[in-house]
Length: 325
Image (cartoon, rainbow, N blue to C red; front, side, top):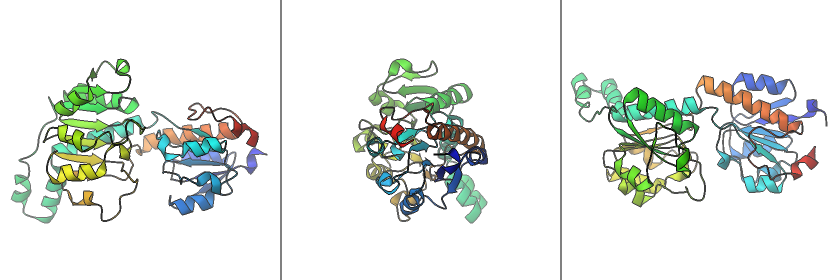
């Protein structure tokens, strides 16, 4: 099959750098939205998909031509990997490509929570000046506080350096291979981290071991003033337990960029809390990171369509894909 005949579905908007690279070798189909029905329909006649949204579990049954999927980021849970392997579809991702953007997103969340920003901003817009100034009472400095990292990969290491060197924070880290922690991070057990940290940041992958890692019991272990930030994967936190912890004021607040069911329904109880900052899975979407990840994602997609292995091969056990060339 000629490369000019290839059709590549881009589920979410990516930087023009990536689109230009793809367009030089294939027809690019851009989805208007990432709704599962839209993705199924558009993928039906495509050879490859680039996504940073969760693909439908039955995507490969609806798209028999698919040979390659590239995750525009790190999260392998966005693709039904078992089904990909069964259908001989190669999957790649781009680990670390957006680490600067995500680390800065975490820092933003930490500062917004520490400075009671949401309430103060709303107060000055809608009420008296002095009433807004009075909302400074709960504000705290991050200097001298303890940051606890659950998951210390590219994102965690970058955030650790920012917070240790720039903010004078003590940094504790918990990860599967503790001996791989960077020098700026002190190894800690999960219990010690939860009991000690003033800010806890989750950036670990979703695995059977990390699913609902932050359950009701572990949320109870946090200090009552502590903030919880999740830029990893939504199901690492038991969302119902988090809502209850916030309602009971067992923790100081939260910033979430990912959610247990990916999209928050309009009536979700998380919207009711003034000490919660919510963003729609865009921590890695700063312009520079989008450009970097898009360039790499495009290159990996074209490599797979050319019959070559990608640099970051998620399911290398999937050899039958080669029969589709």
